[in-house]
Image (cartoon, rainbow, N blue to C red; front, side, top):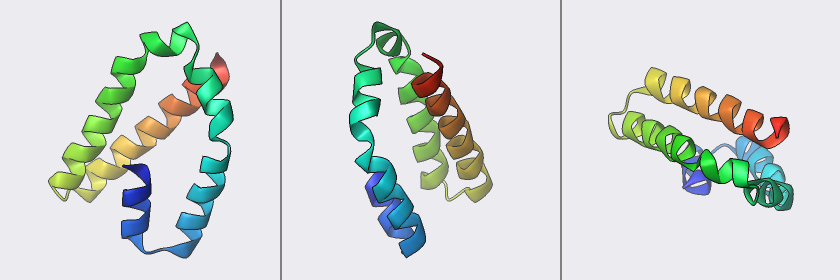
Length: 81
């Protein structure tokens, strides 16, 4: 899902940034193996659903709000644990 959205932007700078972030996925996978992450999985799914709903409605402001909330929450989940 993430890569599809980034590619749809047709913005090389954003795609390059996304690619670099994905290169660090091994760290995120280790974090996601933690039992604390499993307990937060419902929150992660809810965040994704809010992004998808906003995109389906073509509601740019709502999509931005949902993405920013997801970025903050995922960063917190990754680094606060």
